[in-house]
Amino acid sequence: MDLSINIAFHHLFHKTNIGRERYMNLEQLGQVRHNWETAEVEALFDMPFNDLLFYAQTVHRKHFNPNEVQVSTLLSIKTGACPEDCKYCPQSGHYTTDLEKEKLMKVEKVLEQAKKAKEIGSTRFCMGAAWRSPTKKDMPYVIDMIKGVRDMGMETCMTLGMLDEDQSKALADAGLDYYNHNLDTSPEFYGNIITTRTYQDRLETIDNVRKAGMKVCSGGILGMGETELDRAGMLIQLANMPQQPESVPINMLVRVEGTPFAENEELDPIDFIRTIAVARIMMPESHVRLSAGREEMNDEMQSLAFFAGANSIFYGEKLLTTDNPRAEQDQQLFTRLGIKPEQRCEKRSEQEQEAALMSAVEKQQDDHAFYDATA
Ligand code: SF4
Image (cartoon, protein in one colour):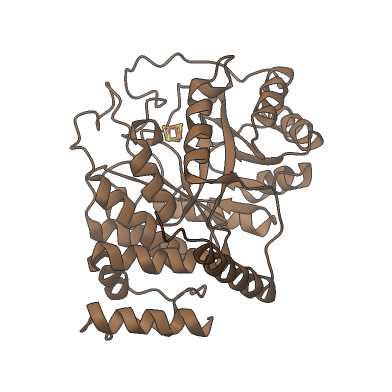
């Protein structure tokens, strides 16, 4: 870790967090670790909000440009009638919601939508199907979709349910960059939200995806009635994987009428931001993504989430319609915050990270040089 950051950590730690040394190893802040323990994650959640955000933002700056956010577009390629019983999901066939069911979209239609996504600045196109697992019949179509989107120069991501080793390999061979499969919550709370597949099933799918050489997108949902300990448990599962997921979506429950969680209590926005910050500290090199629930967050809450270390957003499929008001609103917020969409880039080396950090510090010093003392 950069020495100046280390000193800053220690300085702040001693000023404000006396007594937590037992749990926290500040020397290691900003490093990727796979041995997180419950007590130290709880200590992060317990920190005064401003301290937590300071640490998260400092870790964030070590690995990313703090003024860039990666933008992905999500398209549902097959909607509803899912045999799984995820209690938060309007696509489950177990619940009656207003959602319109749709069969698997035609490949050309998917590619048309991908083209529109590219035009509005998305660098990654994510295709989701409400399946327990793709069938043999479905595979040739999804493979054509992957190839078509890649030919447009965009990164590809899919979420199709559980995958075995052969399916993972077929998707990787077609050029799929990312596979999304969320853990949703802690192993302990999991039984309260889904009964049709196990936590172990999920871990196995993620393992198959890794073995096939694809990048992993995996996160969870807040606001389902879980405790803070469950949030810590979920983040520990993700961070302690042999390789941390490249993308970690942190969703806020959307309470949809007809689903068992429709009447759940509203999530405290501060608790949401806290979880983003803890995720950033525990998975310093991952993109932490704001996805479901973003429509219900105001600009201030999203800004705070970016400050806490979120650096990826989803444009939903509704955004691919002609007037696209939400995309315009996002662009306005980016402009107000001085944030730019992140371009596709390979992971930076340690030296490049240090150089980027130094240049950010120098730039900040330059900015101070132009401070208008007469104002
Ligand atoms: S598997 Fe996916 S689409 Fe199906 S019910 Fe669960 S979350 Fe919804």
